[in-house]
Image 1 (cartoon, rainbow over the protein chains, first blue to last red):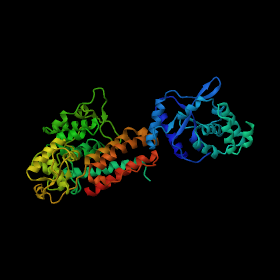
Image 2 (image 1 turned 180 degrees about the horizontal axis):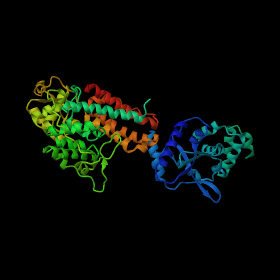
Image 3 (image 1 turned 90 degrees about the vertical axis):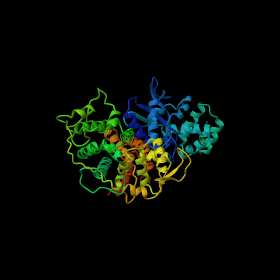
Image 4 (image 1 turned 45 degrees about the horizontal axis):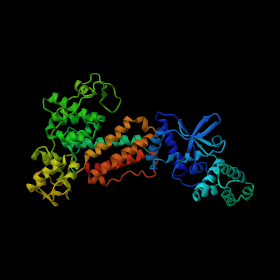
Length: 191
Length: 350
């Protein structure tokens, strides 16, 4: 799935959600597809990774795990069938990252796209994607590192992301190594 | 470039033309040249007229006129079997036709078929009968059609229809029935007369000509016993056997100078009807590229393999190409397939 295809499928998803009863969906998307739709990288990915849904709390807008979502799942399955894609081409597999504390202001910084009246998709901003990709690269290795390097994070982005990763309990040693590989030895020295 | 809607309207018109020619071939009072190259399936044609014919006022009423005087040539049980593939209102249409024609002629037209059809639910409002043109409500709805759930004015029996020319190869099914009586034996023989190289097993034959497999097997046994048909691969029931006409004697017996082509009209007409009805009953969905694409994709999945497997002629029609297709292109791919299938049958019905 490339960006163009993903847009078509999200439009279709919005249309199907509009055609049926049910609440609107306001979802935060991260992962490779966020980078693709933001134009940061140009590649294909298998699916659209949703981090969670937006909730209004006392602290403002937060991203939280969605409640059971058979209506959305059914709509996603229908779009998958229409485009010959896998039935879970849009999924909340990335929601396990919500076990960590998300970067503050993630929702506010997200790029908002609407598809019809019932689907809002917030693409994690570049700034937040550097955070999430750095964590993923440290956690899951090579595949995520490719995206992080392709993003060419600035010193400010790398610094903020590294401090956030440290706060989540990442190994300082591995972080320093990664920062040096990214060409940010200065940032590495300040950690 | 034609819109999807224009293409499907074109498909409906071309189908009607094919049906006109087939009714003419059977002896209905219509102008034109009868077809000769392909066999007419009278029950498939009547079944299709009960649905697609509701878009063609004259065609429908000429078909009813023909039925009034030729009903005894038709198999009620085979017709019932075919009507299972159509929605309930199609059977009710034929039941209305049968009851009205019985009343008009005093003849028991398709009685056994009518006895098996249920009346519409009492609380269901009647629907306009004609699916075409400005549907003005009938000033005086015919009571028999009304009973079966439809509003139309009283039909008129012109009594212009004749019978089929049984020397025309296209009427091979009716020719065989005139010799052997209605039933599996006549229709199996007619079917095999269409196939130069024969057909494998009773199950395949039963599926193609819409009969119960046991009845086909028994018919084949009798035809083999009389030397009319040979079994090139004997070995018992079910999937064994390869049957063909033994020699040209059977063709001469039926008065055929050459073999007509077998076309599975039921599969084609049924597929076209289902497509057109789906578009008619779900106009709102088809106005959306996504929802209409979804519906079209389901139709492609269910109808196209069925049509392509139904006879050798349709096996050669290239299927819709959906790979990488956007939703708004799927209906066009389906239209393209049906147009190609119609082109193929138009060549054999000229």
